[in-house]
Image (cartoon, rainbow over all chains, first blue to last red; front, side, top):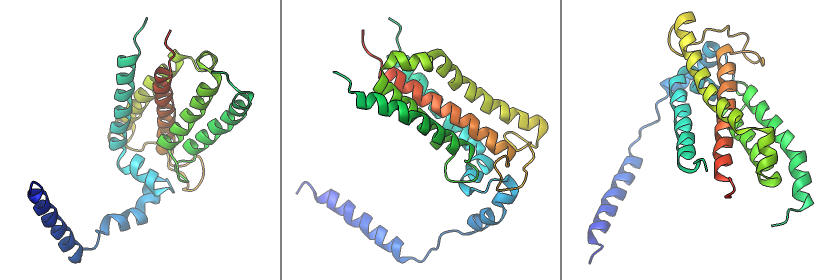
Length: 83
Length: 139
C-alpha cells in the first residue's frame, strides 16, 4: 500500500519513455556535417575530438582545467597539513 | 610489509615506457585518439606505479613536491597566457594565432599542439600531486 505513489510515478515515466521512443525524431545532423566538412580545415587537427575540445570549445577546456586545479587545492588543503 | 623483488624490478623497468606512452599520447593528440587529459593521466599513472612500488622518499627525490606543484600552477597560467596571447595576436580569447600547417603532420595545428602539451603536463602534475598527498605515510 505504501508503494502505490512510486508505482504510479514509474508507470507514468515509462509511458513517457515509450511514447518518446515511438516518435520519429532523428538526431540533428547539421553540426555533425559541418564539423566533418570543416573541422580539419579550420583547426588543423585531424582528430575531430581534439578539434572540437581545443579548437571550437577551448573555453570549456579552460573550465575543466580549473576544476582539476580546484580539486587539487582541496586535497592539499584538507590532508596536506604541515606537521 | 616486505617488498618483493618482482615489484622492485618490474616497476623500474615498466614506468619509463608508461611515461613515454603518455608523452606520445599528448603530442599526437591532434592526430590520433588521445590528448592532453588522457596523456596526462597516463603520465601520472607511471609516476604512481613508481610511488607504490619504490616508496615515497625515492620518488620524491626524482619528482620533488615543490616542482610538481609548480608545474601544476604554471600549466594553468600557461593556458591563460595562451588565451590572452590570442587576444593580441589573433581574433579573440583562445583563438588560434599560430600557423595551422598541413593537417596530418606532427607539428601542425599550431595552437592545439601547444595547448595539448600544456594540459598534459598540468593534468599529470595534478594527479601526481593528489596521489603524493593521499599516499603520504603518517609519522
